[in-house]
Length: 293
Image 1 (cartoon, rainbow, N blue to C red):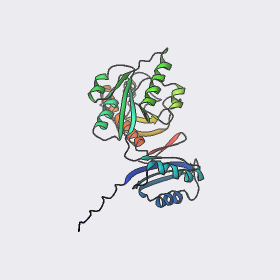
Image 2 (tube, rainbow, N blue to C red; image 1 turned 90 degrees about the vertical axis):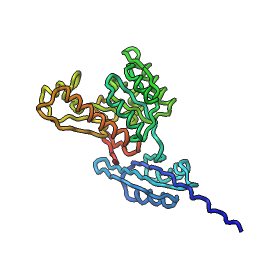
Image 3 (cartoon, rainbow, N blue to C red; image 1 turned 30 degrees about the vertical axis):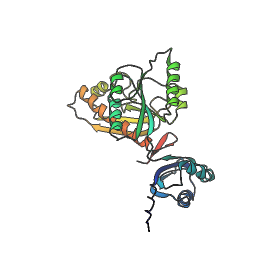
Image 4 (cartoon, rainbow, N blue to C red; image 1 turned 30 degrees about the horizontal axis):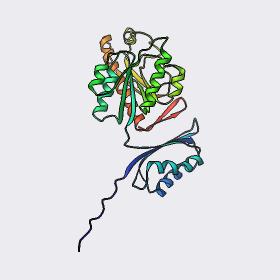
């Protein structure tokens, strides 16, 4: 008598559900009941009810085995979403988000994100590097990332932004990261990519705008160096804040040392913001964010 070996158990797929909706009783029960009835297992769940806005936010990491699929989950959860007027999404938890990095003349944030992506510290796939200069073409090539030089002038701004949007659509890009990209984006582009562009700037704004902000800070005896990562809106450097980082400095530091410290905190804040966005941990709450870090 021949014994038949048992078929190997199907591995469970990992998913992330994010949602926001008007706060009311029964949301958590409805979501958890749906996942239970669908044969899913909750791995991690976070939620927040904002008394100021009256909105409820939730992120659920769950697993499910076949025949459950992403398409089936999206189709069947729609009824739950409609009943609570939810803005919701379901994604594969292990999917690597496709992103574009934009840079001008300062490459510290670009280099940091390229390296973190290569070693697996960021769950992203960098589809391209875009710049209005050619300084970092070789750096991008060393990582095997396509480099696109899109020069920008007052007369070509609309054309340059159209080329960027074309690249975003062609490459199925979900996030654009301004890794020290020193061009002001048009209102139309900000609206087109709302919630999909992250910027980094030093936290001296609006105190020290313009050229050489760290030298301005040194002249004023600043004791804290900071950086802010935020979503881009039509209001320059005033979009919803995702993450901030600070470092204390003493009276003995030089302007050049302030610049070095500033570069470090900019890299740290931007990397965390990109990571959290790629892991679907950030939900927009008006002019603020809910970050399930």
